[in-house]
Image 1 (cartoon, rainbow, N blue to C red):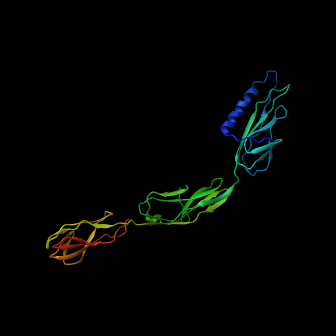
Image 2 (tube, rainbow, N blue to C red):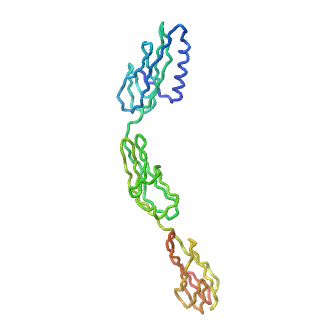
Length: 288
């Protein structure tokens, strides 16, 4: 019985190839040739039952099968897996006799795979709030054997091409609002993540007035309020005696309050109005 140390595949194959060279050189012209018939071995899972390793020589002479490396134990041609995944390497030899030359050793390798398990989510998407135009991403991770495939859904409908662990939206739109989840699948089963609600809102904007110097009665004042969105601002006189023509404000005197507003559009929410107070015959005061 032998349970050799596991070797990387490249090293193991190189070792097997090197081991065959001395035997090949021992064949004599007067000896008959023989071959080893060693069928391929299909991949198995870690819980597979023990099985017989079959190899024969065309000469009819007995063949020796050796376990070179891997998570297995070989006893009288019966191979028992040890329960660990990995690569099993076997080598069959026949040294020849007075009639037959030694056969070229034949090597076989097969994969021992982990036990199949249905998908299980270890993390799921989280609810998110995003403004129009901002990047948006949702992430999830599922485990299983074999590795599960993923399919993101919105409102229960699969999203075309959304099969990665992260669902990315380069620039969010109002239409991206909704409930998202992801389905993980493999041959052992299927799992559905928790649902995550995504809310896309209009962008925020603010209005600011530019300070102005002293104002005399009757003097024309050019109003200069701007919205952070870049959208046009609308003015209204909300207190005092004044005339407003477009952006030009005039007053015979006293205190005048002007409100600047911006109603928003398909991308920006309405701004909170800003009010500035002008004192004609004095300095400008600001109301926060």
